[in-house]
Amino acid sequence: AQSVTQLDSQVPVFEEAPVELRCNYSSSVSVYLFWYVQYPNQGLQLLLKYLSGSTLVKGINGFEAEFNKSQTSFHLRKPSVHISDTAEYFCAVIHTGGGNKLTFGTGTQLKVEL
Amino acid sequence: DTEVTQTPKHLVMGMTNKKSLKCEQHMGHRAMYWYKQKAKKPPELMFVYSYEKLSINESVPSRFSPECPNSSLLNLHLHALQPEDSALYLCASSQDPGQGFNEQFFGPGTRLTVL
View 1 (cartoon, one colour):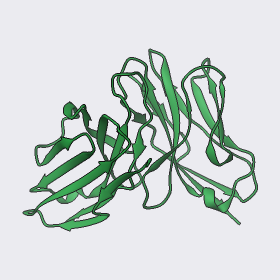
View 2 (cartoon, one colour; view 1 turned 30 degrees about the vertical axis):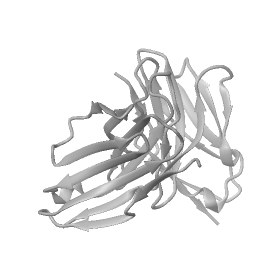
View 3 (tube, rainbow over the protein chains, first blue to last red; view 1 turned 90 degrees about the horizontal axis):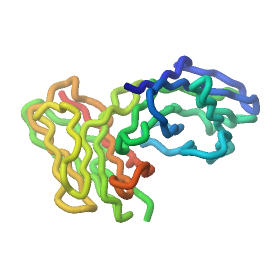
């Protein structure tokens, strides 16, 4: 069985400060890893994904994430946040050979303040 | 066109009503999904259609009835719902369900309130 843990339910940060949202996963097989963003009253938008290859993945809106197999982590980072980054962020996995079934973490609310 | 559309945006219904949610995509995708999302929670998969056939039903109560009339359209028929079914219902689609990973594109959702 696979699971995704996002330990931080809320992360407050000041504008232009760096931020890291943490994600750890557990799976007995290889996985694909994703970060989605959900703005208020909207659907989910894919920020970035790790399928294979380079462990540092760059996504949209200046976000990046690093896949660390030994620590089973896929933390999301941004060097300088903006007010418009305020949203809910979900980490998710698909295990290879498991069809296209996404398993989501519980989400992290990023709140950017002036 | 890289958009998944959902109608209506908001729906309020009584427990005895019958209503339907609609989802449409014109990206040529052959897999379509329904998710349920409660407030402050992640989306939970309900159903998956692959090539217009139901491939996954995550033990969803029969008061939810999915339908895929063609490759572009996905419906969710609702009947005799309970107040606890109030949630955001998200539709998603992906390209080819039989070819490894395919990115799922999400619609904006229908906000359902059951009185």
